[in-house]
Amino acid sequence: MKFFSKAQRTTSVAALALALALAGCSAQAPGTTPATTSSATSSTPAVTTSGTSAELASSIAEATHFDADDLTWDAAKETTITLSNGASAAAGENAGSVAVDGNVVTIKAGGTYRVSGSLADGTIVVAAGEEDVVRIVLDNASVTSSTGPAVDIKSANEALLYLADGTSNTLSDAASYTDTGTDAPSAAVYSLADLTVAGPGALTVNGNYQDGITSKDGLVLASGNVSVKAVDDGIKGKDYTVLLDGIYSVTAGGDGIKSTNETDADRGWLLVAGGTLDVSAGDDGIKAATTLTISDGTATVSKSEEGIEAPHIAISGGTVTVNSNDDGLNAAGGASTGTSDAAGGAPAGGMGGGMDTVGDFSLDISGGSVTVNAEGDGLDSNGNASISGGTVVVNGPTNDGNGALDVNGELAVTGGTVAAAGSAGMAVTPGTSSTQSGLQITFDSAVPAGTAIQLADSSGAVVATFVTSKQTASLVLSNPDIKAGAQYTVYTGGTASVKAGLGTGSTAGATQLMAVTAGEYTAARGPGRR
Image 1 (tube, rainbow, N blue to C red):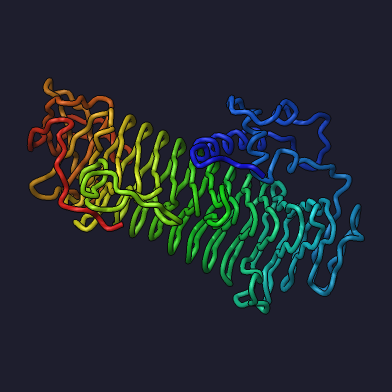
Image 2 (spheres, rainbow, N blue to C red):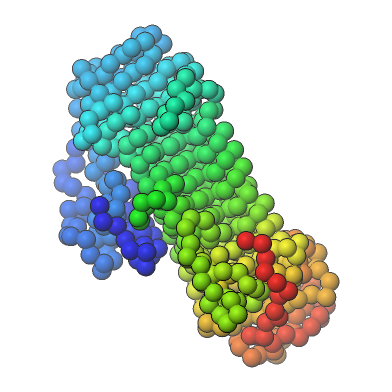
């Protein structure tokens, strides 16, 4: 299946995913046979790049396994599976394709299977044909296994876990598995086929062995109220992981949510195109092997080592909040072809890059709201970085071994609002390709958390207000109101009304500190840790 070139994939994938979220989630209620196909599907021509919702939805339907048809079926043709310890039974359309062996229930053919009841120690297995589509409608179902996964999808073209409206479902695997060989299952919900999770109901997944939900192919999270707790990784897709809508809460000892394929061209990407995602991770929060895109929705990493990590990160919309013990947003990992862009091997732009190699990595923010609280580097790119829109607030490190901004290559600021606070030793500032001006404030002594920092122009009008969330020695500010070459006065104190550190304020009662000139940045002392 042909996908996107490297130059196209960041913007194309984000736009396509968002369009699919709008088109797919408006499909008719499941369990009915629609009189006509949805308008998004029926009007789609061949794949084009003109950008209408229907055309883009069609394009992403080709790029993934999911489309609006996955969420519509004929309720009269459902097969019912009633789970009961030692007495599970099937009835309806495809009852003959359901085998019950003790507490192992095996689905052997495509179709729609409505599952209710509980197994105290059992497994639902899917062993369908390679062309079959299997829908499992969880209708107040609970499955716990003492030997392996709760749901084990061994073969199918694609599988769908649909959470019936008003229901609460639970899937829990064993703490240790009987089968620990190569390619053996390793998650409470484990699929060797493309997997979709959807529906308005609720699902709790307990990954007691390793992972919570794993697809060794593509994974689409289309809707649902889903809580995942896992010893290792929370949610993991291989070729792609896509969040279109729904509420997903992930608590993981390893990575929170990720895609893993770093060997196949144009695979291994992750998209957040809607919904609400909240991750608490022992390692990386949100991670992709190749490209990670956030175009809409709310993505919160409440705890992590590195918050968001991929070789290429693009944020064009939505609300992103990251808390990390190390780097907040980190464009790194995977394969890289490094180059030195400036004379003597130094980076092409951005103060403080030092002698670090500029690799094939990128961090691009063109919209949305991004708030980072990092003990390591706040925004870190081992290649280039750009900010062209949106609001970016970085509460960076207090130690001089890291910086609020850390870019090996050029940091280009051409729009948006940026406030990056942190230590002064490794501070990086916008590079020469920036078309929007800004300034750097380096304090004689670090100001404490909770300090209001006001920037006023020559007339006394406040053009920027920032309130620190931790001790701050350096602050980089850029917004459309800051004019290159103009002189500004820096105050601390006064009054401030802020959200995520930025807002409006007054210098009444404030202390005047210094004068700074926009566009005149102070060089940092050296490169930060990558």
